[in-house]
Image (tube, rainbow, N blue to C red; front, side, top):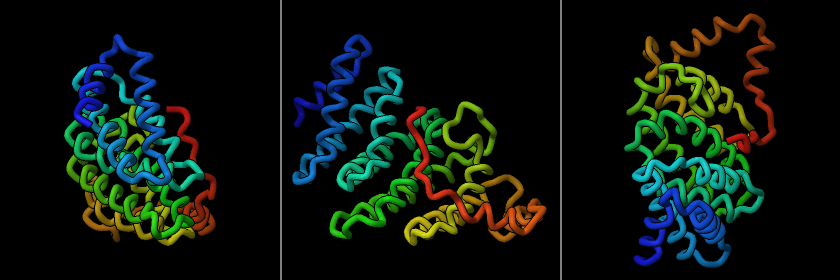
Length: 235
């Protein structure tokens, strides 16, 4: 265990490009192990250490995020479980890094909701739904803390350019057919909508939103989102 963590610290260095990717792929593969829960947990810890040293070494975290996103929307339940475990471990590190929150937080929330849509068909014994719901709650707390930054439009921000657009997206997810997705999206909507400048309540936001709708059918179109799983391969 300790030796592996030291190896991560060494190979995250930019001069070990090929070795770093090989190490990352090994952790991702172990993260999805179907039979060894201890290996999954340790792999998630290793990825957290990988991110930690990537930040300290000023290494781009996109290769890590891309691989986790691929797991999150994979048809295999254990791959999605592995991603959920990794996100749980990454959260305490990400929340302290304003730059990473600014760039990735909305996209991470999107991908977790997409993963949750798939997880509703998983066996309850796996626990994917519960872990993903916990991850969303954690991301929501970060959004509240960083709301002043996230409220400002940023075209370099992944997923949604600002908090207002993300809240509009959450509102569209409240009508999804999957109960955990509806419940989670609604809870996150209520927890962050008042962080939008000038919004004092969810009721006020909905009233303003309704006034922007020109035709009734537009309202229902927004509340009937596509069933397609979004494509996150462009990261």
